[in-house]
Length: 152
Image 1 (cartoon, rainbow, N blue to C red):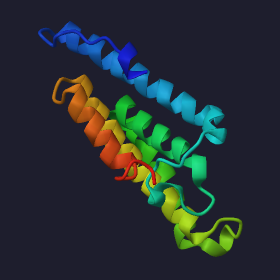
Image 2: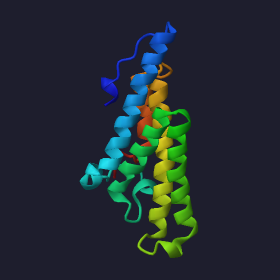
Image 3: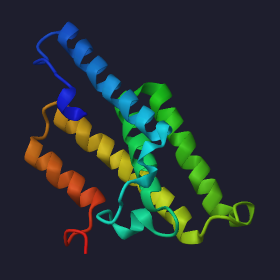
């Protein structure tokens, strides 16, 4: 998805506006992916345990995609929507009696997934705006999401 984003050198106001539009479009694509829920049967064994514990499993994709997308959409609306979802997950953590179908570690995994998604959005933003190269982006995403020993 990120490879489809073509940014111009930010030498003019118009180029910066077009770039911002491209990044916003990528954010909206990530949000749609999260909402479509097509990822739920994906494998998740390479993710850090803190992101998949309980019955969270492949649900990690939704939290990461949504929060990263909201971060890239930016502005008041994007960040407010992301904050609302994070607040809802924190509320669930504080009131487990209202959500007996969830395990405590699943609630913790949802919150960790939200935090990872924010970091992923920031890493992608830094890459797309020229502040990081592809190798740094790959390392940052791996450190944020993946088990350090390659998934064992």
